Length: 485
Image 1 (cartoon, rainbow, N blue to C red):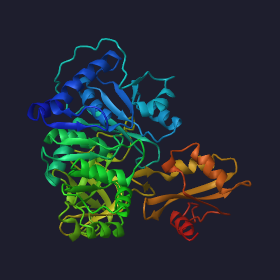
Image 2 (cartoon, rainbow, N blue to C red):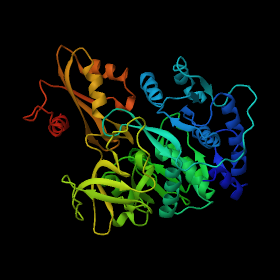
Image 3 (cartoon, helix red, strand yellow):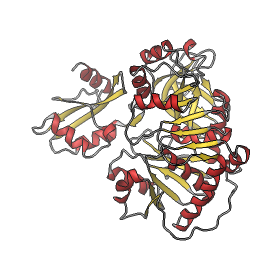
Image 4 (cartoon, rainbow, N blue to C red):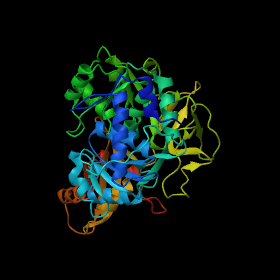
């Protein structure tokens, strides 16, 4: 497989490729030359073929440069969620067996905290060691791992999903076929590169010669700033999670002359949110995807979305989706079952997890529930069992429950997701105490040990948890109890 950036630079030499928040804009030709220079510097810093570069950065522009530079080295991109605690970051860097840690200025302190185990370099301040002379173009092995992206999977333990170059190529091509792609497109990079949906955008742009416009993620999400960016940069495409779209609607977004597609995914969109979006005339394209399928699996084009409210559309070209009942029999149209995905975007498995059952004979068993209508459109009923998706971030209850149970005053804990108009779901917990405590103390305990989005927004102290006859917690009953408070 040919180096994507080299191909894009050859075909779209003078067209804009990258528009950063600050500094010079890059054409595709300039970005190709920059990636070659950066790959030489990284090689001099000790990164070689098969090496794993841990990335801690808020800058989408610097991360995009790094993506392409690593391809020149046959090295692996391992982006970590910058919202994690130091302990969480360390655990994931160990799982990935990182070679070195790269960061931007914003995340330098987080990276330096890991400097006792790994060499740490700021991407804009690499060692002055003379860069090694590397070829400007390399052939890319399609089966080689391009990135390791961490996801909670189905067990609650962080797992490194291995994404290959062929996964990325197939995903970008299939997305272009479904949504359309042009060298005149401008994608606003609103998702961080540790999200597969964010990482996919530079690759899509490289295929079509489109421009990637960086949105400032270091200050958190701000609807007013995003609305300005959509207009000022004549954005044609933007990827959003439902929480972002909710805030944009609250801020009065009614579209712009250039905006052709709002790719809406990362969590289930409520019927109320979709109705408001359609009423505002926004070009929303509901989509269903997973890290393990390299982003999009099914997408409903903007023109069709109002006619199929609640659907995420048909599988992308090259992918197949089947629905399987609990008895492993294929479901009939309209019948709910587990969503199974097959195709060239399905990942190469989790790192160091050969016995994981998510990937079976090339088929991705998502654990998500849904159904297909008679026309083959997918409707997602529920995301992975018990998994909480809040503001586009995955939270697995087992991880939060483990932190709560570590508190000396807590005997039992059950964590569930409750419906939330803004966040899609909010994290909530019912706690059985063993000693005197209060909600404020438990909130402080969680904030010190978990990323902010994982911390319960609602905690109730109870005498006991509802159990089945076999002693299992009835999560549905816990959720009903918490909703009633």
